[in-house]
Length: 286
Ligand code: AMP
Image 1 (tube, rainbow, N blue to C red):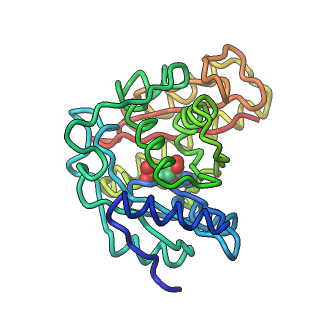
Image 2: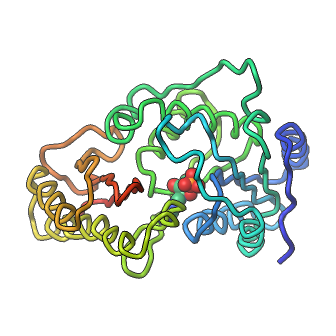
C-alpha cells in the first residue's frame, strides 16, 4: 500500500479537502493524537470503507495541548510519525494531517472555545477540568478544516463520543458521527497509546480494569440490576490489583447521568491510575 500523503499545514489541508469535496469525493475523517494502534486502525479501515473507491480516508495526528491539564502527560505523550505513516498506509488512509507545532493550530491570539455543557459534566469532565472544552474545540476546528461527510470516533472514549455527538448536533456541523467498538488485547486490556507507559508489572495490574467491567457485565446478565452493587464489585476488583480508582459509575448511555438501576444499555465507565498512568475503559451492560 502506498504511504498516505503527509500534510503539515492546516491551511493546505483545508484547501485540498474543500477541492476534493467539490469534485464529489466522499470524505471520511479519523482524528487522533498519534502513536497509532489497532484501535485507531479499526477506525481508519472503516473510514476507508465508508469513503468508497472514489472517496478519501483522512486521518489527523495532533497532540492537542488544550485538552491536557497542567499536571498531565502532555510533555511525555508518545509519538512515532514514521510508524504511524506505515500503519496508516496499511489501513488505506489517503491523506494524513500532522501539524509540527501547536501554534499552527492555536496561533498567538487564539481565543475561541467550544463548551458542551451537559455531556462534559461528571466522569472525566469532573476529574479533568477543561479537558472536554479542549476536545470540543479541536474537534470543531478539525471538522471545519476538513468538512468531512463522516467522522469516526472510538467508544473507548465513551464520554468524548457523547460530547462530540452533542457538539455536532448543536452546532449543525452536518457530518455523520460514527462510534466504533473498543478494540482490546486478547487478554481484555483496551488498547490505548498510554499503555506504552506501563511497566510489565503495571501491564498485569492494568488487566483489573477490563476484568472489573466484564465481571459487572456478567453479574448484570445474571440479573443484578443495582448500580451500587455492581460498582462495589468493580471497586473491590480494582483495589485487589492495587489500582488507584478515579471513578467507577453506571450511567445512562447518552445523558451520562448516574442511574440507580442498570437498565439494558446502561454503561459502566471507570478511570484508574496504574502507577502514574491514568487509563479509562467502559462496557455496555446487557
Ligand atoms: P486518541 O489518539 O487516544 O485521541 O484516540 C483517537 C481515536 O481513537 C478516538 O476516537 C478514540 O476513541 C479511538 N480509540 C482509541 N483507543 C481505541 C480502542 N482501543 N478501540 C477503539 N477506538 C479507540
